[in-house]
Image 1 (tube, rainbow, N blue to C red):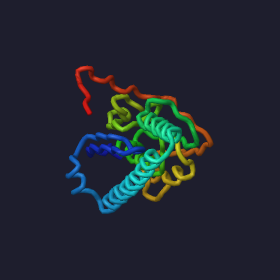
Image 2: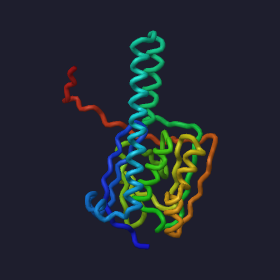
Image 3: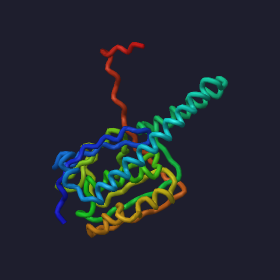
Image 4: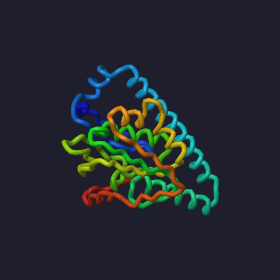
Length: 221
């Protein structure tokens, strides 16, 4: 099967959701105009799922704000620490471990940048707190692009076998990978193989460095 040449630039900015993918080819409006009905239905489902998560996150943050306003100093400090820890995991600046799954995709022409993006999105939708691809941490500004030999992950080339680690509920994420029309079916249709392993504990050691603040920028209230 020839490498698909459609370009999508997607920025997922959400607590717990983050990937920017650039795949050479069509513009997003051209992709939507030429997309098949099942693809459009799946895209709509993804958008609805993200909206649901956003609504839930808003309610959770509003509840946390209320607790901070009415709680004791100790409770406020504890809540602040929890938020700081969660943000460090989201930003990818700290290693993390916990229950999760490992994925292995084999097949040179069985996995493309668009497939990797879909996998990351499906894992996020299933509650993944942190994701790693071939030793590279996936964060908000991570992008994927097809190359002649493999996939570029934010400028670093990775090749088959593609190894993904995700931290979250193992059963939920494994089920998401196997839904009809999902990534498992995609890899199989492209003559590749996908192995999903659920584990009580996995570890993601890779981190990213945050850019240094610009000393010439003045922050005001």
